[in-house]
Each structure stands twice: as structure tokens, then as C-alpha cells.
Length: 139
Length: 247
Image 1: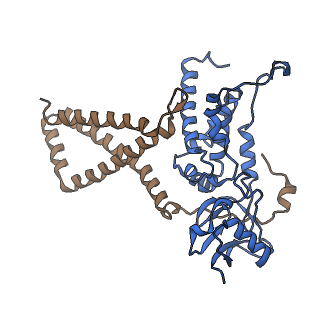
Image 2: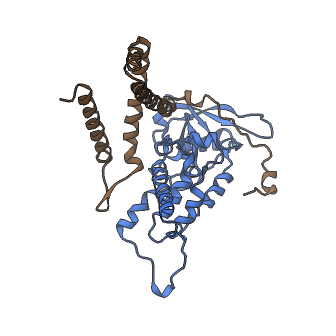
Image 3: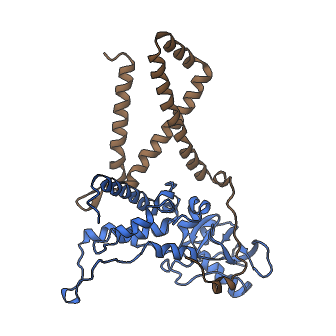
């Protein structure tokens, strides 16, 4: 909708402040929020890493060995640890937000938030346990 | 002399100032005084030219929202003693154009609010003879929280998306749209979805959650927006799978 010219006539000098590009550094809360948004890059990274692993596995034993050697590089381990921290941060903040986005009502009453968040954690931990079991030999 | 506290109040007088600047005032630190009382004291006793909006001074009208030490607050519900020993910085609501001192220009919000039709939309009104539209306590409960919004605009001043994208329709307008969508008497959900499913509607929201944190009436606009996103996605799937389903 257009404002009527008469309206702006009496307010000729509104003061507008531009938002700084660095607005998210001004408060710890905003900084954490931007970290949460950036953590999605770590998720993309691990998806890429998994595809790379599958690809080198498909190229044969030697290629797979090269991949493993590459993974043993100290800087690669350090990088992966940092990426893992981001992914954990991503997952935990995501699960904690789930009850806010999906309020579940049973018999007209809203379930407490933890009852919506908890199943997410249970499934997450169970799946992780299965993967660890497979990695350790699966017997 | 009784104890005092310093208020640093943002002043902007368009006829003489190029940009806002702070002016300090010492006000009595009474334990039952809120920031709005201090502003009224300044206006009555120290500088009558200070401009700010207020009306009910009891958290109902939504006029006195301002930034207090960088956080959006209803100044009628923000006690001076919480900030002792001060100083307390009082600024106009962030992200809005400033008209004068603590008064901001909100026409843009009013237009956005109107766009989501925050009233009961009926395809057809039933005749008066059939009586009122009845509602169960459960049906009331499903939207009551969102109906507590008083349009104080604290959520707009808290939301970084509002600051970065002036076209974003914003937390309160979406929460109020949801208030009517969830009302069993309303039939306007589809019309509102057309406005809100655009990029500047619900999808602009990044779920930062600041709106919900600052809301003085516990409306939870962030929750409303995420629930709306889920609804928009399910509606979209439905229209994809059953194109004949929608009119």
C-alpha cells in the first residue's frame, strides 16, 4: 500500500538507521544463533565426506586405503572434530526447537515440551548405537 | 535526598538534529516506579518537550514499547529497581523509522497487519435467528494464547529478519493470522495462506526465537510461525497429490 502524500508531509525527516553487517556480533544470543545457522555447513560437509568414502570404496582397495590415510592426517582429524562439534550443536538445538514448532495435543491439553523432544533424542541415540555396533564389527 | 537513578534517553528533534543523541536525566529511584513513570516524571518536571507514546500504563494498550538497555520492553512493566544502579538507556523501538524522540513510525506494520485479515472471515454469515457461534473450551484454548497480542511491536524490534528485510511481514502479524486460523468460527485460512506462504511471509523467518523471548504477553510468535510453516507444507503436498481437492 502506498502512503498518502499528506501523511509524509508532516513527517519530513524520519530517522532511519541501517542495520550493521556485524549485528550478530553485538550480543552473545545473536552470535549463538548465527553459529547454529552456520552449523548446517558442517552437515553438508559430512554428507560430502560420506559420498567421497563411497566413491573411493567403488574405485577399489587402493583408493579406499588412500582415503583412510587421508583421514589419519592430524589436520584432517582436527577439522573433523570441529565439524562434529558443529553437527552436535546443530542436532541438539534442532531437537530442542522441535516441540516449539510441533506442539502435540492429547485430550485437549498440550504435552510438556520434553515429551516431544525426548523421542527425538531416543531415536538419535539408538541409531548412533547401532552404527557404533556395526563399526566395531557387528557381532 | 532520596536515591536517584540516571536515565539516558534518546532524543531526536527532526527540526534541529541530524541524528539521535542521548540526554541524561536523574529521576527518583522509587521502588514502585517503572520506566514509564520515570519518563512521565521527566516530561512533567524536567523537560516538557520529551515525546513518547503511552496510554493505559498497565500492559494492555501496547503503546509504550521501547528499547530499555538494548532490549525491547513494555516500559509500563519494567521496574527501575531492576536496573539499579543504572544508568538506564531508553531508546525508540529498533528497526522502525524514528519520528521524534521515542516515537516511531508504524504505518508499515499497520499495512502488514491488515494484509493478513486479522478478523473472523466467514464465507457466509448465518442468520441472526440461528443464534451465536458456539465454541468449546478446547476450541478457545487452541487460539487463546495468540489472541493475547497487544501489537506492542516488541517482537519486531527483537527480530533480526525485520531489521534486514523490511518486506518481512513479521512476528505479530503472523501470530495474529494464526489466532484467526485456529478459531473454529473462522473460514479465512486459505486467503491468509496466500499472503503468508510467500517468501516475505512465513518463509522469511529463520526461527531465531527472539520474538518469543521478548514478548511481554507470552504469545510465542516464533511457535506460531513454525506451526504455520508445517501447515503450509502439508497444504502444498495435499494440493500436489489431490489437485481436485482445493477449490
